[in-house]
Length: 352
Ligand SMILES: Cc1cc2nc3c(=O)[nH]c(=O)nc-3n(C[C@H](O)[C@H](O)[C@H](O)COP(=O)(O)O)c2cc1C
Image (cartoon, rainbow, N blue to C red; front, top):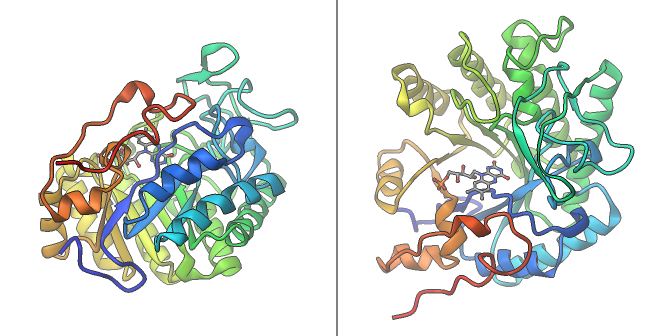
């Protein structure tokens, strides 16, 4: 079942988005093109989190998609993946408050729905570990500008040869910061009620879908996940139920759901089924899946596709290994975010 095709995709195995911090000066390079092309047999590759704005570059060596150089750089990746018959979406990750000024280019500002710090530690190439900086509360004008940046970057992504864009509304970054009332204490139309907290996410989604096509747009959510200081709140269920219905109205291609935290609670299990029921597009599930669990999820129609993170770091030929029940190599954590090819492009394909 995992290997059966789906409209748009040759199989149901997705490479999950993973920050790998190899983009020196925030510009995608040949090494990255090689890494992604090694993994081109996935039904869909979703790139590492890529910033649609200078303000969203809170981590070191993450790529952007807002300058000509970045567009040209990414073209090498899309060309290399397409040459092998693969499909590739770019993930738009605007970090919002999860960042340090040490990592931002000159003139950029750390922005978030409210001036509340993420209270985390952050790696910088210049000073090692530092505390995340306190963001500025984004102004209504700046909200409009940020949406415009998402739109321009989506057009850039298509110009760079991507098959589509995934909006990162998970794991505590800018879009999710609007959803969570602990990070969003605004009193204007972007804060307070569920409809208000969801407004930015919906506006960005509609604007991107209008610019590049709804069939080229997907979004990632992580309900109940507290990663990057996202404390739980009372209306998680209702917030995501509402989002699933609104996403369905936009007609976007997929929802990519990190379901690990939700599965740990009764209401969360119900939420996964509710989102599946309300959203008629493709549902991709993720978090700790094995071949067996993924096959079961697709056979029971709980999902259309399943994405794999860790396994894709160390098994470039994951599709082939699943198909032939070959052993899986474990990923080496110490090289997740280090520059260079070690632990990046040097994982071999299966050998007897
Ligand atoms: C090194 C690393 C970097 C990651 N970077 C991102 C990212 O940029 N965007 C994102 O949405 N998720 C990111 N994730 C989360 C993965 O997409 C995925 O949700 C997670 O690894 C769980 O899936 P798995 O159990 O198959 O590994 C990252 C995970 C890892 C291991």
